Amino acid sequence: MEISPRDKRALWAVGAALALFVLFRFAIFPGWDFLQEASANLPDRQKILEKYREVIQAAELRRAEISSLEARLRETEAGLLASETSDLAFAEMQLLVQQLTAAQSIEIRSVAFLPVRPLGDDYLQVPLGLQFQCSLDQLASFLEAIGRGPTRLAISNFALQTANPREKLISVNMNVAGIMRPAATDGERPE
Image (cartoon, rainbow, N blue to C red):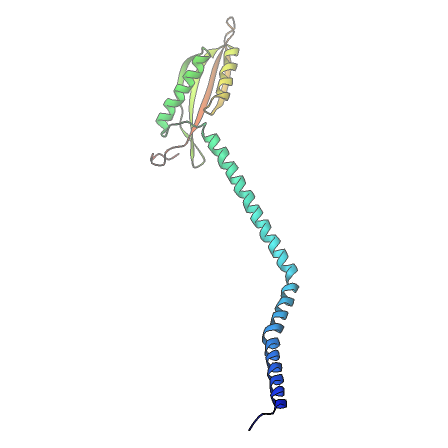
């Protein structure tokens, strides 16, 4: 049986219609629905994207803050005592104080090694008790030298008394402390 040309055209038309139906049913309409859903969800996705951008910006800001704080910490720790044990730190403190007082022509009468005190978990305060006599100008110069020196020193328990009114001398009792970071292998723990 032979197919007439009219039937051939009808079969081609049915095949093309079937192909178009399959194309629209399984490709174009699902794609169209997906695009419609995506465009409907676009405002929500934009909000989510903005939140992610804010989080990233905040994280970058925090990294910059951390870098700044680490730089400030390194700068501050440059002023700590260089010694790794408290015994060496006392010797370093005594040498520093002797240099500062000698520069102002102050003679130290006594030095007392006071107990080391913990400052948080990572630092120790190494205090020295000092007694000396000097003029007010010498004392002011000594205190200024402590403040501008490369090693950060703190003063506490500061007491003045008149020693020799005729020579305008005063008796000074003070504690000067430096801060150290003990070595991890030192075995010493702040008490």
